[in-house]
Image: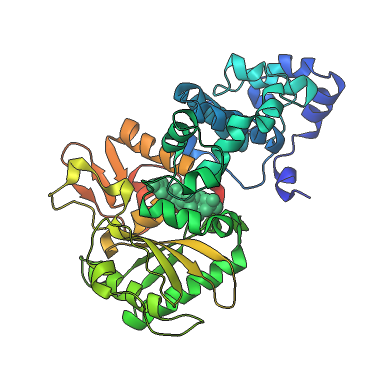
Length: 409
Ligand code: DCT
Ligand code: MG
């Protein structure tokens, strides 16, 4: 049973009132009566988003619609759905009527009027799930390195429908080629136990290079998810600001070491010195393939800061690995940051994506600050606010700390 449910239970009187008067109670009652503690004016990034919430079925359906709007390029409506889903994830009880839904600011009239609240279903969701375009787009965007834009072009202009069509495509990027090579494996979800085993290999290797290395398993697993699509880890150490040497060494070692020990099949030069390139290496070690050998973290690759001393030093390596004793290939993102950029990098890679957006938007709009993976800055002066921990970041923004388990927005 959902333990949280008991925490948010309404005072007995109010509950009795709600039950006895049926749906009209949602009409008569204020939001505070219905959902004590839920305030429309609370900034999105100050709400709690536990993994288990009260409106899962509805949120799952809205997610289908949101995804569909993104695929068809209807970004405005996609955003409206995301806003509504965020509010629903934080809402402390299940929504029971259109009247109740309308009291929530983030839920517009169109969404509130969806037939779900009377029938428990949404017709468009059902038709979308069997729709050819959606199915093909899912197949195509499941290839690592293929986003909605490429997939739409392939579908509409080139008429691609299957993976076989894609395999014949002449200009596949190296990333897409690796995506195809491991297609079946990379679609399979990763259990937290395996993610931890994968992370442990990297942590151990990192500590053998830099004994004081800092290490955090980030992404969904840090938010308490038991399953994920990849393994994301962030590393740091106290010594140099330039972390590329550490990353080079780490990648090199991980390409060589694994459960099938053998000679390293790649030339160190080609993999490690090339910036922003994708290389397929087929190494015998723990890392099987490298998608991106070494590149600035995309989110921090910010024009505003290029060439300044506040530029991002965060580097990432995207690779395909195999956990010790396992047969399925997994995607792993190894992110490495200098110590003074570590807290914001951990925060930025802990997600959820939507939570990160809300935090960054808050910093921009209400604090005139810029929050990026590589640090928190005053927007005008670009002066960096020192942050040694995630708590420091929230504090500098004047916010209540939200722990990772409550960032499942
Ligand atoms: N992230 C980001 N910007 C990027 C890449 C990642 O803000 N360009 C953040 C958001 C979540 C986190 O890093 C990890 O990314 P994912 O692995 O895609 O998300 P996840 O929450 O770990 O989801 P999953 O469980 O599917 O791996
Ligand atoms: Mg992840």
